[in-house]
Image (cartoon, rainbow, N blue to C red; front, side, top):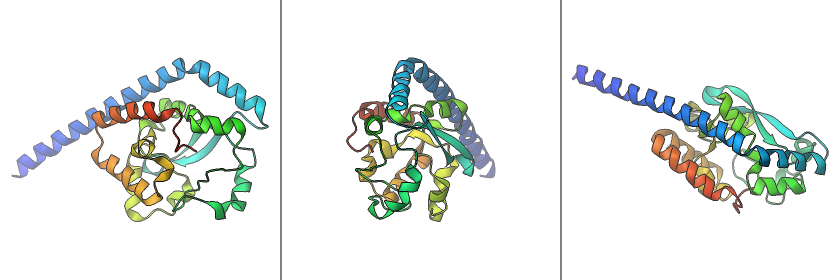
Length: 216
């Protein structure tokens, strides 16, 4: 019986390695192709952000990656430059449960920011994060360090995989889902993940990407 168990462990380990290698290949091809094909869109968004509000084109923020490793996540800037300072004044208007902050009509968001958030164009720079290996195309959305500090013990399982551009949360209602249910969806992905699930999530995300009424 011990020998059989060892064989099963080897099979499972080989499957895991094949999955990780295949997933990374899809990430490189997908992110590289996306940056190339969407370069005109990226240029237009960059100009729109630059010429309609004061501040840098890109916004970078420390996020928690696989196994708790910190990395700089990139976005197109969609808020005013002093957004973090204003956040404290808006804390009592938070519409999201748990440590997350979400607000439907957030006054910190610029006019261009509202559009690129609604269409998820603000996330395009994260294709560079995927190409670098900090993120994957599919995986739990990367959390802020201060959010992770408030995780319950069972939630840390989501940090055993690379964070991603999309996961179950992205295609299941996004901001209409409370924090705990969001975490449960992420844990479900971690436990069930395989290439078929990843591919399905990528295609589902494409369909809901532009004009998702739940995006903020």
